[in-house]
Length: 115
Image (cartoon, rainbow, N blue to C red; front, side, top):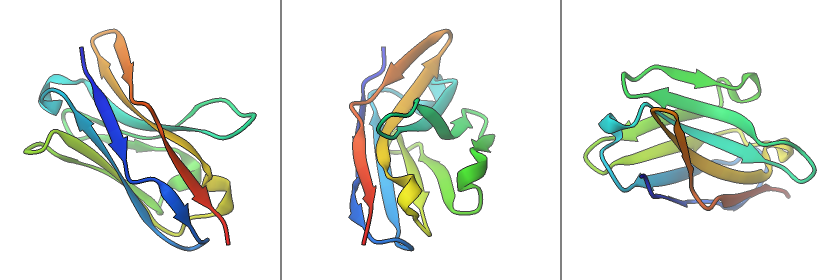
């Protein structure tokens, strides 16, 4: 099993930045893929970015060039640096861990982009 705890959400103005953190309860080297998903009201949950334990990253087209996913193995933590935020980035952001056929989710953190 993997427990995931997110932090770092909040209210930010358009064009601003936020960094989300996701602390895992075990070594991220033992997790196949770590990712960030988001869900806006009335919409399906969607992939934002993910990173494999080999370091390969993947981004949704809507966030390419603005968001960066990274890992600190010493802290078993995955980060999502979000720059140039837009109103359409408003959503609950969830951390996800995929381990050999099982998915684990964090509790989610709200990100609101508004002036």
